[in-house]
Length: 152
Image (cartoon, rainbow, N blue to C red; front, side, top):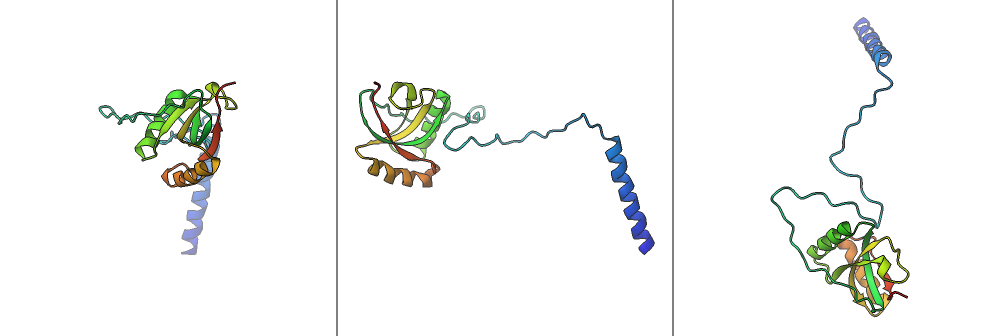
C-alpha cells in the first residue's frame, strides 16, 4: 500500500514537472468575464445594452433652472451624458422623486466635464442630507447633499 502511494506521488510530480517544462511562457490565456468591472464609487459605467426587442420605460427627468441657487442630492455622476441620463431613468424607476441630470459646465463650482444625476431641490443642506441618507436603501449609498449655483 505504501509503495502504491509513493508511486502515485512520484507520477504526479513528474506530470507537473513536464507540464511546466512544456508550457509556452509567451502565451497568456485570459478568460473573458461575463460582468463588466464595477465603476469607481460615485462614478457610473456605461449601461449594459438591453436585449433585442426590449425597451425601458422613459421617465421624464427634471431640469435644474439655470438661474436657481439651491441644494440637491447628488446620486452619481459620469463624464458621459447618455450614461448619466440612463442612471437618472433608473433612479426615477426606483421611486426617487424629481430626478434630473445637469451639466457641470452650466453651474458654478462643479466639474465642467461631468454630468450629474440629482434628486430634488431643497432650501437647506440639512433637508438634502436627510433624503440622501434615505437614498442609500435605494442603491445610492454614496449620495450626498450639494449646493448648486448659477453660472458666474
